[in-house]
Length: 291
Image 1 (cartoon, one colour):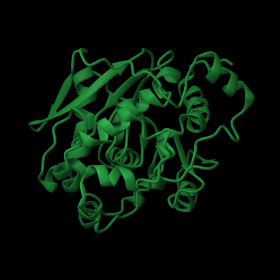
Image 2 (cartoon, rainbow, N blue to C red; image 1 turned 180 degrees about the horizontal axis):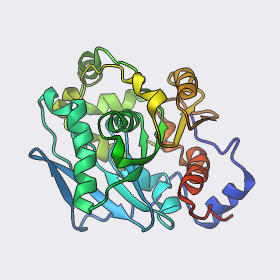
Image 3 (cartoon, rainbow, N blue to C red; image 1 turned 45 degrees about the vertical axis):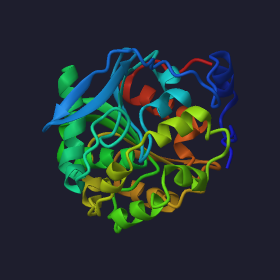
Image 4 (cartoon, one colour; image 1 turned 180 degrees about the vertical axis):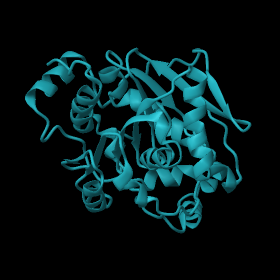
């Protein structure tokens, strides 16, 4: 599957080209010698980084992925001019701590990580953008700490129950990280040397520990009081469930991205950013991206 701009309007395409935002080989602004800020949640350090200024937006990526994905695939460059972006390495990933005990990855701990970062920055409420695991964590924040949210943007995720996650993760990594990377259904344009290096830096024991069975929390949907954007690639198995559950949310819209499956979805910033930017402009009153 290759990301394309099918369905993306011409104005956004011109913006993309004029601002030199590329899917391939995008230079990450997060330099190795930057100061590394951490928030601490019950002894676990959570690495985060801040870019831009304006209404605060938390960005939380999915399983096996750290904050660099938001840089490489255009999200930071597109959003930092109007928003304060709070990029978080999920616990077990990137430069955050990596406990090997599955109990360290329960719902309360993951929600506590988001709250700890916001507290460290002195921010009471923020907009939230999460993909896959990051999207599920967004629903968990809405469940346990709804007062911290101004809006929710959820990609490729549902609030429904998940089972046999540890067994799945154990199977995925039984042959090591290199074999796991080769099996991922991602185009070569995504499997760059820098992508491979970051994937190989993952801690397998921590990734296995992340795999907790999680109960459904879909009962929160009718009571959500913040505006929501839900999106998924039309080849993602999550797509039909997301299209169905969005109808239970009082103020929500669903966007279908043409082409991507679940694995490639976060890497298609050219498809996801137009609805994300339009949604943020609506709920914040910030200027929409100019062509």
